[in-house]
Image (cartoon, rainbow, N blue to C red; front, side, top):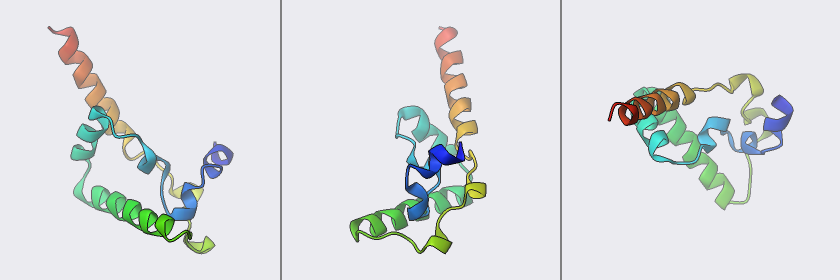
Length: 92
């Protein structure tokens, strides 16, 4: 898994894999449920990556996201939203 993730190149910009998740309605609801601190950290990582990308540069290697820093911080909230949507749809 680490090999597959390293090929994406997002670590060079200080991003985590779940920072790259496509904005769907379920993801937007999940983002609203993130703890404030985690949401702020995510926003900072994305803003920094945008600045770096537009400047055609990357972070110094020692500042790259490390594989052990990868965690699924957003998935639990996405699954929760999807379960609630499914429950709502099946109860009608």
